[in-house]
Length: 302
Image (cartoon, rainbow, N blue to C red):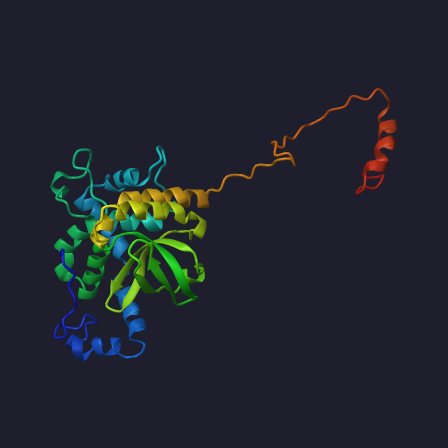
């Protein structure tokens, strides 16, 4: 399962027609509109995968694995896991395809400490019973790293062109829903999966990062390139925790911006004071004296 397996021309077509692949869906995929057809095929075969992987996690790792992975994912202490966390679109794919329990500090089953991610173990056990296209997709999810991408151009409702900030590769991504929120110049943290001529988002940050946040990303790129090694997917996967920490640091600031600080023209903090006056005259006299300061209420209301 460590190598990507492509569908052979003479293999049975994954659509279930009973024909050979070259005599069925391959023809459609190679004709105009074939990319859109393949995108819909992939979406169809992977439907339900997250729920099935989550169920498999309980039997393979044990019931405490999800919370254990969350503690490693989240850098802040006492940050509870909740289903409505905005980081769910990143955390769950990372848990499925990238997380490995620490053998020296874990509660997962001993037999699961074999160096395989959850998705790898799932494919090893159930892959021969799955649609070959689904197997191919899950294998790609295990192989490709999370990375930061510049949004080069956007086709609202259809997709966008992304450029990997670390490798420089440009990818034409098909994404119907998310392309409505993206703008040229944004930065996206994502896991991009490519199947033949189709690229799609398996995971994407809940917020787009503005260009002003790029400095820290470029610092990480500089550290990676300082090793004088080819910047390959395998190399980037070695930096998955550094990538996550950077994403969480920037994402938390964007999702939870601090309250604005009010200042006077000298730059000093603006303080609100409540003044209470004691008058040594009748209330009617005070009211009549202050009436001229009122601009909104009539006499009866006062």
